[in-house]
Image (cartoon, rainbow, N blue to C red; front, top):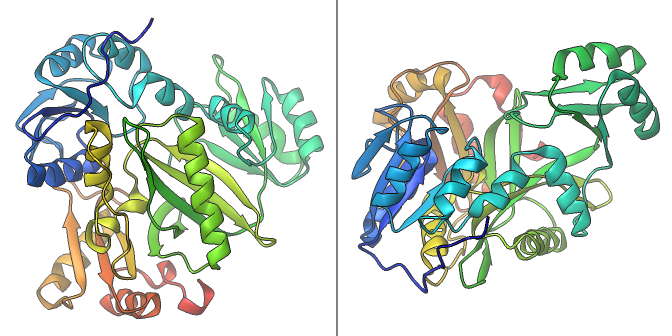
Length: 392
């Protein structure tokens, strides 16, 4: 099915942007787009999702609801998605009626781990060694070939550490297969990567092919959920330059339009391996809202609307830390006395569940060490979440 709607040269302010998804990413895109004069409609199952609270109109419908998606398209001059759990078939239908710059192809690739790894490997992008496995015997053979430890992952549906298990020996093969296998799809087994840092680069590419990369950042995870992002990443300049080149290669070779977060592992020998892609604004790019000349959310709009990309220049070192459900009350108690270098972003979610992303704070500083010191002094997060700056 060929794309019938040709891309415009530019969509000027005053145009309406439809967003599939009403989470915090869509919310922050809308808040930035308001400054530029764009209008917004959103589609999300929840009538009071973060995006609906700031959009011009909201369709409360499921992501598989083709009729609702087509209504969104009728209201919109351009349609974008803000997360990957969208049915590509719905996006394909929309592509026949309205301009969808991110497209369904990228969605099909990035929401399917095998397609993603195969595509990146075929493009010459370095990834961890992997094998596709269809049953426990194939898993046992693949694990023997790749060596222990290795990581078994579901092909679809995994996020924040869900849908994966580490195999440390042959005794783990059968339990892991029983836990993760599904009758309708294989699993992917990946070689365990002994990384020393987790890095990411948010790269933008607009509809005219212009590319810009935000600074390389280091990500610190706790319980498989992003805890903190350090900008810029405390790595050698040559490593940062190589990471940015890698992100540009991904954007060019996959012909990405919009944004893509390229998550990478840094090995002790300086090698970089791409772990996964997120074709949208990303949690690790939230620091750009307060610390860069252009935020990732404004950049996303500029990219899909055909405007020149803004400067991604970092204005000040920054640390972004997520506010999960368990951190909301400590944050609220601390707000009246927060230092003036702490920026608070809350997403408008009503129910604060443990592990649920409710917001984030960005701490600015003359240096990363200063910003991290402020984070530690706030007393919002448990001591186990904190690490000494010397270990970062």
